[in-house]
Image (cartoon, rainbow, N blue to C red; front, side, top):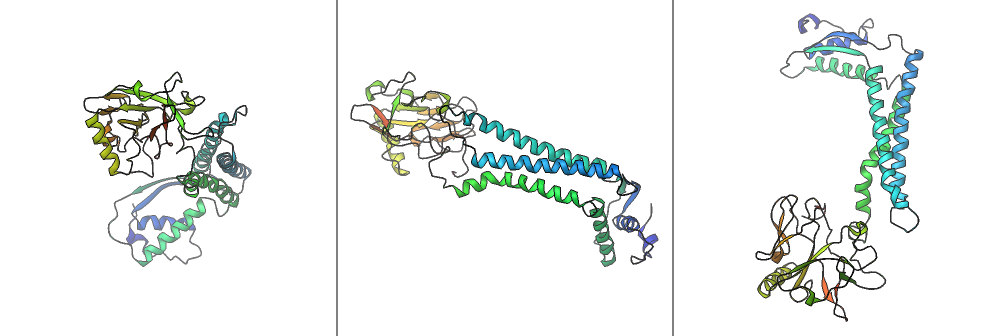
Amino acid sequence: MSTRTETEGIDLDDPKLSKFDIVREGARQEDIEIVHYEPQFPVPGTKAERRLVRTVALFFLVTGLAATAFLAVYIWWPWEWKPGTGADKVFTPLLGLSLGIALLCVGFGILTWGKKLLPKEVSIQDRHEGPLDERQNKIVGNTITYMADELGVKRRPLLGISLLAGLAPVGAVAAAPLIGGLIQQPHKNNQMFTTGWHPNKDGLIRLTRQDGTPIRPEDVSPGGQMTVFPGIEDGVSNKHADSPTLLIHLRQEDADTARAANDRVGKDAFMWGNYIAFSKICTHAGCPASLYEQQTNRLLCPCHQSTFLITDNARPVFGPANRRLPQLPLTVDEEGFFVAKSDFTEAVGPDFWERP
């Protein structure tokens, strides 16, 4: 292997010195020996090379088009469910298809570029110690410039243009959900903060059984509990899968403890009498937290054993969940049936970026 001593006399300004000689010298300054170097196209500009350049450029351009399609669907496609339109049924598939094509094409483009256009090289590097001096830095700088040329962007401008046109929309795709969430007010009524309990044109939503019948306070005995659903059309269906709620009739002592806990966090008006209601959607992974232990007032999620203390604002006391279950504000209407005073005031479901 050549050493630095053998090459310290090299003249970087010698016009007879090829770029590859500078690269080889730069590598040696870093204790790297290039033992094999083979350009894919010894003669630049051949038909085969131009054909490969066009192929790579096509991959990147398709990437840009697919990513742009993703943005168009994400921003303007009517994702909301509207009877008879079916628009909501293709929203997610279109996002998946466009993003999949974009990622697939950028991958094929980079692989084709690397395997078919870049030179084949085998190098051996010894461990290097100590900083480089000024002359070595100059050689390494020339090496970096040469390697940039070898990537082909400088003498193959189509690659650079297509790469920029393809990756810029992909970057916009990555930023779109974050930017969209910051532009839109987080507490504005939207799919993340609106469930089937949101008041509609008919007023407050009644709590109902699975068969749709409304519930009176006397229907739940002290210490008992009942899964309730919003009394609206499709309230029990998957359309409102974020709405199942556990209604609990606490014993007097437990109700006093829960009311004091509510008061500490400004939710003193969420209970009605000794009744309290919490979302059944676990804040860890979205499983149904459905196993209620009335003696300890703990609610267990069977998926990963997250446990919530009902008398302390459904605070997680065990397991991976780290956010309490959202509480549903309760009252009774003039006919004596339970209704939700409002929707949940916190996001329902798995851990949410805005909440601790």
